[in-house]
Image 1: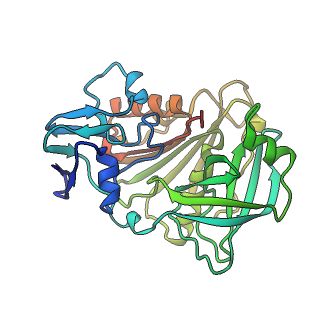
Image 2: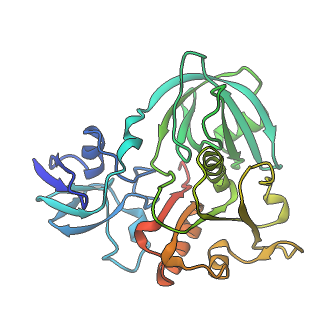
Length: 324
């Protein structure tokens, strides 16, 4: 067994056959993660001391030119004692994932390509989650991951905002067959994307496409415990109809900036959300960014914003990767 030491002095043991992430999770220590397959980059960590072995292909790191950017804890096993430039996430680990029955409570088309699926669990379930987390939706042998698009509700229902995928099995069911009261299963909550109450003056929430779902959940969470910070929401789509939500019903003082990349429309900025952040005129040193959506956007935002003063530890992301 090898000893893994985190930057906040938390220590746990890891065998040579375990990934660092699996070892931590098995001991109730929650490290930043999402896909667990080396594709999203959420579990990246700097190695301060020690050697690791590559257990899974780090698809995320293979796209990077900077080989010193860090390891992915979901892909690496230890070859010695390790010290990581990484902290655990504390109380988020107290909520354990469960597999539960659920029924379709409602289904609504938000656009031709996006639907909102509302699920209800049995009343005795008491399903708990942190705004920003996701669940696996299960129908027979089909399993897909979707972010929860709301904060905790008294009635226990959850919303999932789902994009239609050409020839997708779950898409075919949801967009062409699903009916109210259909019986499904869900597993969760999963993931560590969540609000961090740090000392930053500004909160910047970036989203592309259905990446707005966990952002909406964070905003609803802010309604219950409003942070004394400046809040900026930047949502990017290709065309105006891609931006299917408004935020006027939220009891929050925020700046909302819609951004389009393929269509120029009055009242919308043209370009990419990550570039628009630089036009806000805010001090990135005193800012925390939460980014959700495509891996391309998240990679670009991380590089661009850290080059302009954002601290790497204040960039939190949830990359939407294909189930394939």
